[in-house]
Image (tube, rainbow, N blue to C red; front, side):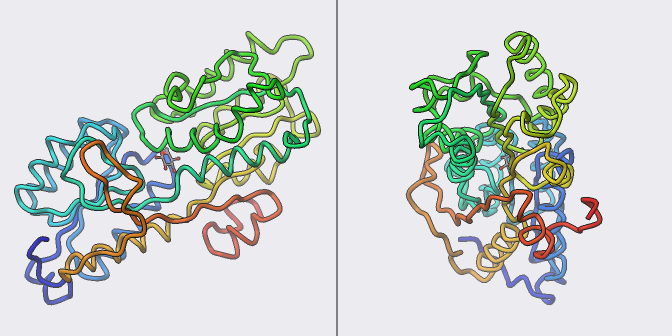
Length: 349
Ligand code: BGC
């Protein structure tokens, strides 16, 4: 473990608590909240913090991390853009004994990652899959329904976990014909998820993809009944596409899943344009990472809950795994507003 003095006021006055935080993009609300909350907590503990966002560009993320290493970072908190691209820069980090915490997403293909703090990403997908199963009554044999699955960015390892969780629930219904994927964009198995991935989790790319599927496979009176969207940014694009194809909220409107509880999506849920989102309370994740950093700096081993699952190809990374939660129209108030995750006025309540 590294030889750090305590991250107390005294220690930081001596420059002893230096943390680099590297987040993927400002284009998604969640990463802004994640980064700013952790920065605030660390600064209140008198740490020096460099918080950077990399515009979803791997080369930019690498050079930002290089700068943080050059600036003497003793702890690096990194949510990787490309799970497999950070090996060389983390070799440099290890030369100065920096401790590396993989944030939300697993850093792959390197031994130089010490801990992972994340939500149960398989469970995120499972919650989405089970929601579709329940709403359509699939377990009772209902169907056939028209169904379109989407998956996240091919370079993001989380996207594979989300899909596996959902596909374990839904694939049997695709195979027995209760769910019909007219576009044919239906991965044959969990490991084929990247074949339909939306690069960079971009809303406009999801919109273009949904436009294509609707205009090619849903002509005349054929309607889509359910869409597996792994997160809220994709859901925004899918909703825009449905909107321009004249779908409007009501009985005929498809089920659409999501993840993150972004404000625009919570509004869409209240307006009947999105069915659910999966909340991963970023405040819990930030608190956990803050506690990890405090332990590291005190010379203690941070608490982890899973030392078996997160194999990054070079090692099994010890992880602290948090629990995600489904939010629908009925519990926006209790789960998001009463808990202070979002302000009522930001979603028009
Ligand atoms: C995160 C999601 C997020 C997505 C796009 C994933 O790795 O876990 O919360 O929606 O990236 O940024």
